[in-house]
Length: 342
Ligand SMILES: [Zn+2]
Image (cartoon, rainbow, N blue to C red; front, side):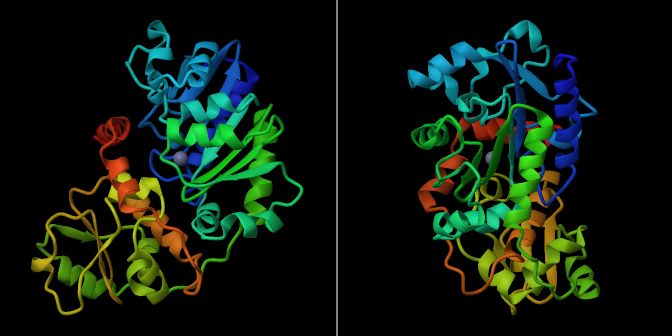
């Protein structure tokens, strides 16, 4: 149980608030932490910040041995599971994949989000240059894409200054750090305000045609109306069709997206892809698609609606996608996220 301090209660409450906002957190993405009494309390892998006020989603990780292991480049901190006192982990959960990233930040409170406005900046090829103007005056660094986990933590360590309190993670998201939850919240709000990008207004789905086509197909129209712009807005569709833009897309929807050709019958679509786009009509989700897949479909719609056709994007490479899909720690998170739905 996370200590019943005022800061712990504030972290739980704030985690639930940001976890409930799809423009900030999607599915089991993102994580928050609090360092107190030699321990870092961090979200367990595969759990959802949105559930922070309903379940005990935080695990304690002993900080000094974890930091020593990071400094020694010990592969044991890839999952950090060995640093959780087992008597405080009755469910046998693992700490977040991103625990080491939180551990190397000196501040007491670390908040990591997949804010869609930040992602829309973080996928720009010239992100660092453009962000320098927007974030001027803040103590921030840009960290080019690296696989989340120890690889990313090493790259962060190479750039981190003792006073750094904002990290923009290329093709990934945002980290803010402060010594209180209130200060972290204020900093996150400030960064979000500066990075806000207007969402394009997008055509609606042809719901009648979509339902008709989906009948007896194993697919259903995406329940969240915001998802359909991936198929109905030509700019969003063109951007979505390239290689993947950030890790959780690959983890929960697979690499890229599948678009049904205008003259292709749904029966000839690739079998059981989680998300299927029908240009100018709308988006379908397979009946086996998880709630996390639906959340990441919405995320892609929100990100692409904030990108312009002429922007030059940096995308994940095939090797990046493969590294995410072959990764044990991610398979664990995905399995837990699925179990959490049942
Ligand atoms: Zn992340």
